[in-house]
Amino acid sequence: MTNFQSESLEQKLDRLIEAVSRLAPREPAAADINAADCFVWSAELGALEPVSRVNRVDIGLIRGVDRVRDILLDNTTRFADGLPANNTLLWGARGMGKSSLVKAVHATINRDKPAGERPLKLIEIHREDIDTLPRLMTILKASPFRFVLFCDDLSFDHDDTSYKSLKAALEGGVEGRPDNVIFYATSNRRHLLPRDMIENERSTAINPSEAVEEKVSLSDRFGLWLGFHKCSQDEYLDMIDGYVRYHDLAVDADALRRDALEWATTRGSRSGRVAFQFVQDLAGRMGQALREA
Image (cartoon, rainbow, N blue to C red; front, top):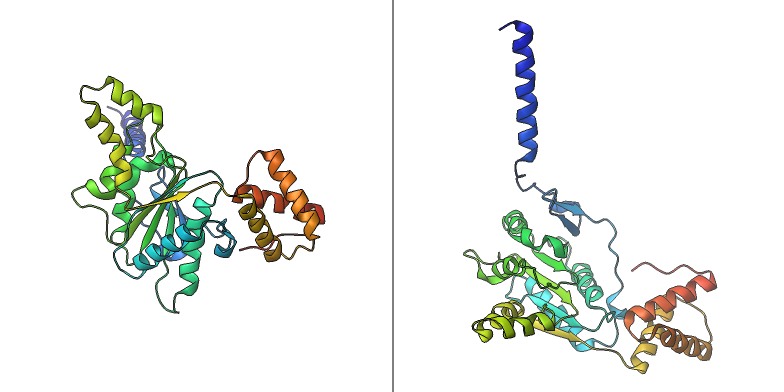
């Protein structure tokens, strides 16, 4: 074989080895946990991406859910202090502050921590990446920090089996959930699965009760179920009053009430989200910027 032919073959082998190495599974990437207090889990990269500016509101602006707010704050505070705490499912009406409350509680705890104490870390994991939870927990369990894993709008469809990965990651695996990790999820569904999916299991399974139990038992992995319900007109107006005072918007009270109710009527609903959207529109018409949380 000539030198030219030999070199050409070696180059081809190098290219082949490089291509195969790119296809090989990535090892979990070491993360700089000190880079931020909030991260987004990138399953594709196997890495935690820091979030420099978190989209959240002050906890005092989340109205109409006082009881569940206090329960979640107490549960999270105990976890941050190294005490036992529960995985939590925040379920119910759209736009009533489920995800906003998780982020606000996280900010409140870190704000009130004494100087020098390790901050609580918040990590968002996307719904489609739930089956990578074991990889993420492998990264987190050796860290000296404590982590709230947060999945917004969690639910599962008919042919989706990734809920089994979540069940194992929460409580059912050999190792179980690491002591420094807790899992919070929001959902419009109390049992995370569509009703017709549960009914279909009843009608087609050999043992209907066992089939339903297999799927409904996922929500049982959450020690706390916090329900969010549609707000009344008075609660809706109270939300708007709170936003207007917080953002120092000078507006006539009667005009504010009239316009706020008209806004809710055009949207066909009343909620914290609708209230905030009205205040955004109001501030824009007034030519005034909103304060950051």
